[in-house]
Length: 210
Ligand SMILES: C[S@@+](CC[C@H](N)C(=O)[O-])C[C@H]1O[C@@H](n2cnc3c(N)ncnc32)[C@H](O)[C@@H]1O
Image (cartoon, rainbow, N blue to C red; front, side):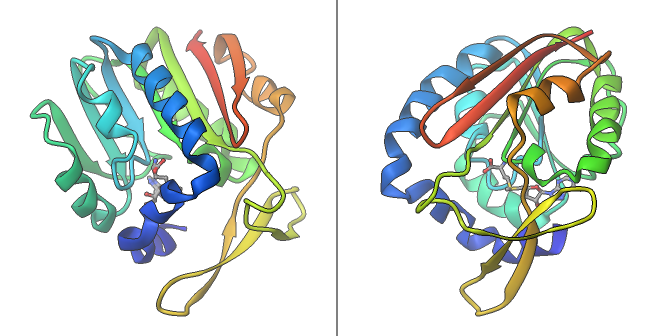
């Protein structure tokens, strides 16, 4: 996964050009930043900064974490706010901040977390967030004809897609499409006030740290 996204950095943003997804993207780009006004935000797996560019202008500060230096090369050219810090690191071992963040966002990340690591990720995230902090995960829904077909599943129920990069290399990438119920279940004891919303091609799941 880490190696795949490092290799894909320069061509990653093609997914944001799919014509059929443009209407949804404009709606989300308006909705999402409203949740982060004046907040000290931790963005998990920020990648090429597509969502950072909408959140950073309204946030008080933003730490963008990603395992790939290559994706940050793209992100740095896109986001100019001085209060953004680019941090290379592991979403499963988030460094302890001082003070704790009061909001968090992860775009197209939760779908790549293996089912067996969801709790580990969520507990680690809670550790660095204040009680009551708003968390939003944004991701895509499986839409026949637009989404890359699922090719296989493993013993714990994770699903995979075969993806080909411009250099011809083929990658099997873990990509899950969790239900609303699964999302609510995953934050049991960790989060309160869950809310799930959908657009035609995307879903968002929000909660507050308990
Ligand atoms: C699907 S991309 C999402 C990028 C961005 N959030 C967006 O919505 O456009 C997933 C990102 O997760 C990063 N990543 C993969 N494994 C990671 C890990 N263990 N810790 C932090 N980032 C990771 C990849 O480098 C990649 O940028």
